[in-house]
Length: 315
Ligand code: AMP
Ligand code: MG
Image 1 (tube, rainbow, N blue to C red):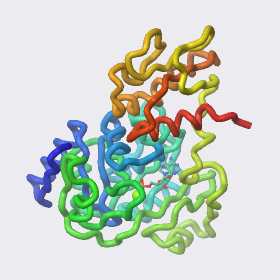
Image 2: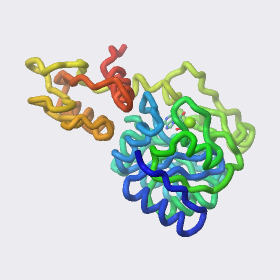
Image 3: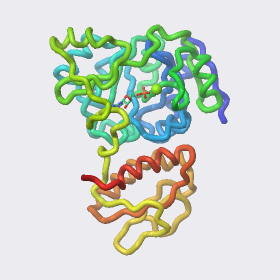
Image 4: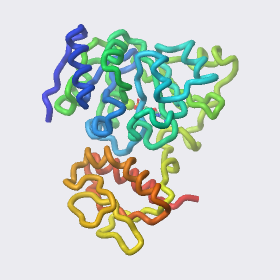
């Protein structure tokens, strides 16, 4: 449990919120859509804590918030139709799913191991002041426990997350009150989620109709991440020990692990290490990977969900 600070929407509040974010803390902040639950998007542990605080049962990708379009270049490629939409609508309630720039420093938990990242410049003076001051990309899903409705006041945030986050920056009620519209590129623009910016405005800007992603279709669609990050090497879950020819991805005080998600059995550390360790073991070739059992509680559910998808037979 942490004591959740309620910060005022003034210079002191922004300075405190920025310092907490830069130190790996979780800070809820207002945007024009809903309150976000922010973490430094370059800090694996901080991003892992977002999933823990929300009680999310899976590592679905998070939206990265930036103070202006110029800040995107370090993390993603903003070109063509995407650049046109950014020019027309940022700051504003539209999120663009862009090709990830390798080496940009974002935690792989932010993009759930995908080669794309969702970015947005919010149209809210306090949010932009915080983002500019923090000088970090801020990953932020809505600031509510998983499965509950999105918060549009600081009181809503506290009702769901008090004691689980370091602070909430109280900027009063959100103006739009629904989530951002999400656009992906296939490379033709595709509506991934309707939201605060009307589809008609986006179509007028693009000069043609948007494709709509059917909920059960493949790439990019929320909840459809199963096939995305699958290691080349086969995975065997709930392994007591490595068999000959296998490398062990450990959890807890196990012996002979090639890599260990968390020798002390700490779930936040394990989540923070998950994608890094999978990639590292995978780059060693197609040698099978055995994975120690991980308790299916709290963040362990999200870790196991990801491991099960990685272990699932692929066609
Ligand atoms: P929330 O975290 O509740 O604001 O929701 C974020 C939404 O953005 C979810 O529906 C995600 O699936 C979607 N999203 C974020 N990043 C990506 C990505 N790289 N590709 C596809 N969808 C994404
Ligand atoms: Mg949400």
